[in-house]
Image 1 (tube, helix red, strand yellow):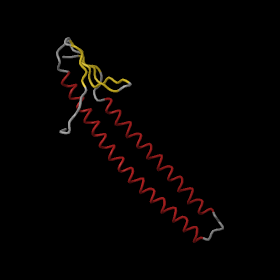
Image 2 (cartoon, one colour):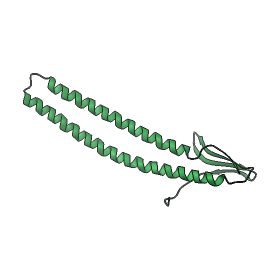
Image 3 (cartoon, one colour):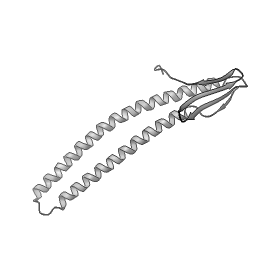
Image 4 (tube, helix red, strand yellow):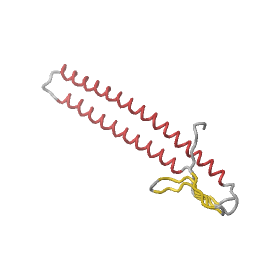
Length: 147
């Protein structure tokens, strides 16, 4: 049996995690800013003593309507972005599955072979490197739509 080093699919999992985390951070910062702005605006509406109460209510209702419109627009943007991230995450998972299946196949190579999985360089990622008596092989795993 071949000697195996490294963990296959690690790069795919890290890429998926980074993209999801970035989206969540942007979403939370956006919600915090929208809440902060609307809170200050509503508070400012109540702090103006010279306005009649009808005008104050009108200002507060206008800000509330604007807040809900902005919240709805953010929701639509976030829904589309989450769908795209989910499709992207499924693609990365398929790639990780393909790399794992390839690793399992390469494990059955006879003694004298060395398999190195998931070699990451600044120019990209190499899924598998096989070194043996017949030469050195670089394998890049791709998964078709049938999975």
